[in-house]
Image 1 (cartoon, rainbow, N blue to C red):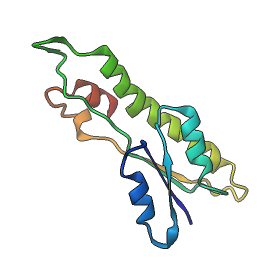
Image 2: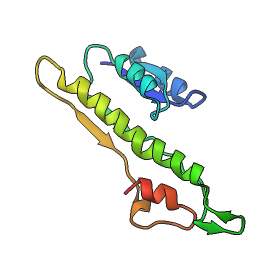
Image 3: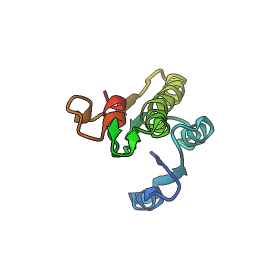
Length: 132
């Protein structure tokens, strides 16, 4: 078995990977919205991929309209790119590798969500929209 921790460079991902028993962990510096980086992380799983867990998510505290004007479209787009597009990117590439297993055993993909999708909080419009 091998565990690939895919997270942003500068995260605690490397320490988490090194902390796994038996040297089973490996760190893949990955931005989930970057197709090439996700491909590399998936390839680091070796011969097979059985489970993929998506936990990527960013949130900027910003109201739709605040004292300084409207919510930044750039920040809203970045939230969607990471939380939605990035999650889908991992799903599609993980599913491809899982489906290619010779034994036909497939795999499991777990996507984390948030109660914010249903009970949005002030200043969390982009995050809530991305987690529904």
